[in-house]
Amino acid sequence: MTDTPPSGSRSPPPGPPPLHGVASLKKALVDAGFEIFRTRGDEVVLADRPRENLILDSGVRLRGGGSLEVRIVVRAQKGDFPNDDDAHLFDRARAAAARAVTAGFTEVDAKTTRVNDPGDPARTLDTFYEVTFSKAAETMADAVAELRFAMGLAKRA
Image 1 (tube, rainbow, N blue to C red):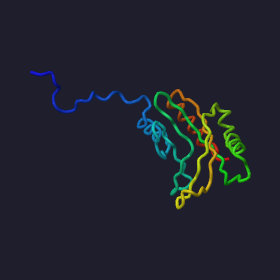
Image 2: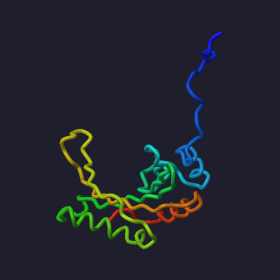
Image 3: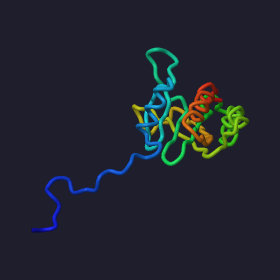
Image 4: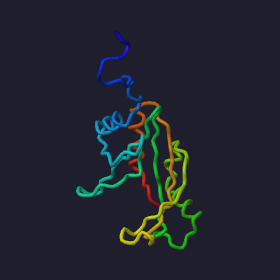
C-alpha cells in the first residue's frame, strides 16, 4: 500500500474567498442599485448612463481586497482649455473635486492620459489631466453612501 492520494485533483482545496472580493462587491453594488461599467483587478468601476443607449465610465470606483476604498477620478481636458499649461490643468481638476475633499477624500494620484486617434495612433486627439481621490469605508453600507455622494459630483472641470 502506498501513501499517494487517490486520483483526481491533487491541489489543496480552495481557501475562503477574499473578504471583499470583486464578485461579492459587484453583487452588493447591483443590489444597491448601481450599474457596473467594468472591473479592473480588485476595483469595480461604476457606470454612468446619460441616455438609455449610452453607458460611460462614471469616474467612481470601489476597491476591495482587504479593506474598502471609494475612489473618484476627476479630470480636466486639454481640448477644453488649450492655452493652459499642465500644472494649471491639474489645478482645474483639483478645484472640481473641492466638495469631495471637504467630505474627506484625499488625493492619491495625478496623471495624464493621452486619447489617441483610433485611425492614426501617432495622432493625439486630446489629453486628460486626471486626479484620483480616495476615502476608506469601514462597511459596505458606508461605501454605498460614499459612492452615492461621489456619483452626484461633477468629475470634469
